Amino acid sequence: MVNLLIAGYHGFGNCGDEAILKAMTSNIKEYAPDVDITALSHKPEFTKTEYGIKSVQRFNVFQVLSAIRRSDIILSGGGTLLQNSTSTRSLLYYLSIIKLAKLFRKRVMLYANGIGPVTGKFNQSVVRAVINTVDVITLREKLSEADLRSLDVSNPNVTVTADAAFKLKSVEDERAEEILKNEGFIERGKPRVGVSVRAWHKAKYGDDYISKLARAFDNIADTGKEIIFLPMQFPSDIAISKRVSSMMKNKSYILQNRYTPSEILGVVGRLDAMVSMRLHTLIFAAVKNIPMVGIIYDPKIEYYLKELNMPEGGDVRKEKLDSGKISDITLNIFENMDKYKSALKAKADIMMEKADENDVLLMQQLDIIRKEKERKRK
Image (cartoon, rainbow, N blue to C red):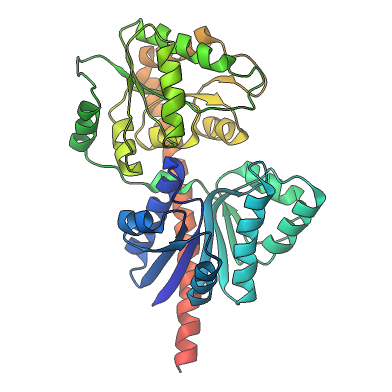
């Protein structure tokens, strides 16, 4: 038996991070049934029940230390963990997990990580020192590789792959339609546009983007499309979704209950187009071959839109959103649906193949561990 520990941002109600954990654990169970999985979580009981794995409280030092000591390999990820835009404390938390793992002579893999930004000379020096000790690194975008090299990280075991959520499996269509029905969605045969918004206090023009999104969604709804809000961070995205919806003159729908990543992915598959600020809603759309328009607030959104060859509707970091631009691009998708779907599928297939590399490299590490255990038994 190989003991594996996952350290990520889990148990906080973020659908994207939970999608990553679901994809990771499902793949590991499929490819390596002899692996015993434990995850650090803010809500260990939820994580145990939801994923059928072991879990310990991420803020309990003794439980975390015990989990590290029992493990043969620690996976840091996925997602953008090594950054201090959230806080330096968050950065040092994840670095300390890696440092402790290496002190206990455990193998460590950065699994489909995003890197950066890391600011401040002290933070940068600590990241450099710790990451150079890691056994294998997979990064979910080329931007992270550039950030890593800008920190003078010399670790040669780096591969650019793709976000683990590209490998998530969805619920059946029947379950997705049941969710929509339970949320009050009235099927009238109209085209469906999913929207995913988030609060972003760093927008250059403050909350102006909220009213602009509402107007854009109204423009789209005026052409006979249904607008369905898909909150990805529970419950904060529900609040911002309600705020945008309240500014619209047309009726819209909001998924107000908590759903699993596989259920949200299933719902995305029942849409015709997507407009989103959230990375993992865009990834879900790519998995289901649903053409999308991205609203940029972070470099990772810009990166994946380019990789998927999908249009952007504006960048809240540097400009006021143009409601007409967003609605025009979205409506253009409907006028050229086959072209958009063909372009997206070709790119999404590439990203799914890249996501497979995360597990190929992990399996290599597990093989090394098994051989080491076998030598010790002899």
